[in-house]
Image 1 (cartoon, rainbow, N blue to C red):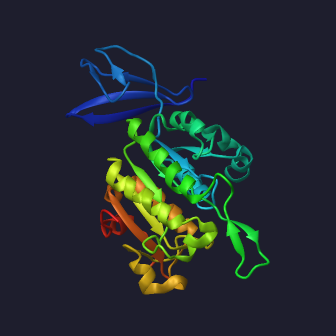
Image 2: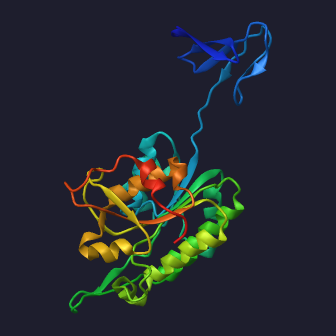
Image 3: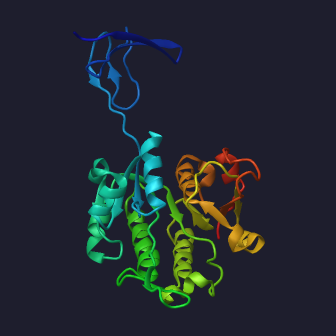
Length: 314
């Protein structure tokens, strides 16, 4: 039983090309009549001859660092579900990857730390063939002494903001320059980086926002690959797609709305990251982004308009 055979006619240059598709075997048997030509990559037919060619669809590959973080895992799931991208990841922990990404995704993930120079070859191999790079990795503060007022937080040794948000991010960008296939880098930072005295900089004496900004400046001025820098406000664990998004520059939204009003659901940030890959208007743009409260404004659906309202540089 060879299954059903479908006839599909294409009009190309005013001539018709008849293709028979054997659906059960996944073969394409083209017939060109009296003409011979090449129709797309790897799809050819010769004068009056029948040939069977297996058709394979290859999605563009994107490397995601920090894919097991709370925002990173949302980006990963959106990329997988989009049907447009083939995501691969670089994370530190196999156990964490299995827990949040699922066992079926582990084969797509490489395991190394961006702060470890010995892991550079693993990172380079993961980046091979990638069209885009999404940098979501970030140093994560952990509680040190909750009995104090205010509670004391710090960072894991070897995972300070300078090492993760600057040196690790720079390592990714420098590798992307050497991997000729990468033509878009999306870097997710944070609002507040224009203020050296921001409270987040004081956590564990890490100066996390300052190191994030240094990575953003490096990407924009030194890397020479189209970029999108996304600096969200305070991240909240609320449903996405239900709010109007607002973009700004240089912490002006933070000054205008205050800390309490400068928030955005993680899921909305993840959606903006994925949409940036698909919209040319996002390229060579850097912007802050927050959301209005639910019920105020119209939920953002037109991402072309959103990206067109942004501008280059920090």
